[in-house]
Image (tube, rainbow, N blue to C red; front, top):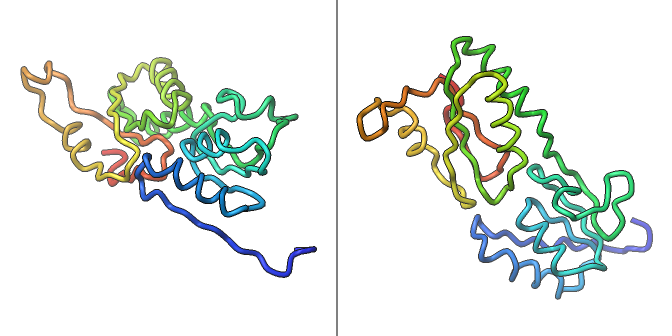
Length: 187
């Protein structure tokens, strides 16, 4: 890189603990970095709150930068934020379409959703499910990397009076969240 004899990468990882994000962003900024590369919505929010001057090149697969207010528009973002943002609600329709292709009798599905990712994906999947006449159950998961096995077992439970006689799920979907690891998508 022109003008630089060396490049130092300052890496900090919150290990799935949201309480560590703000202190880590503060620490990185205090080390006088030239640019921030936050990954994910929580780190993007923390970086934006922490600085209006250091360039921020985000990688966020869950948020719409215009809807969140991080940028004025995609064509003219303004401010100090740019990056890769992939919260495309149209993916939800495609996911559900692929599930219906794989399971033609699909009538009931669940989404594993992390509330910290915002509502863009959740609403899009709910709208797609309604349009496809698929009953959707939302199962909330936390930000920390977790095992989805308990949620998958819950989705497979045999209907009982305590579960309001709900039928078994035909499919499961995971919202785009790096910490969400689904071992089963469709059965």
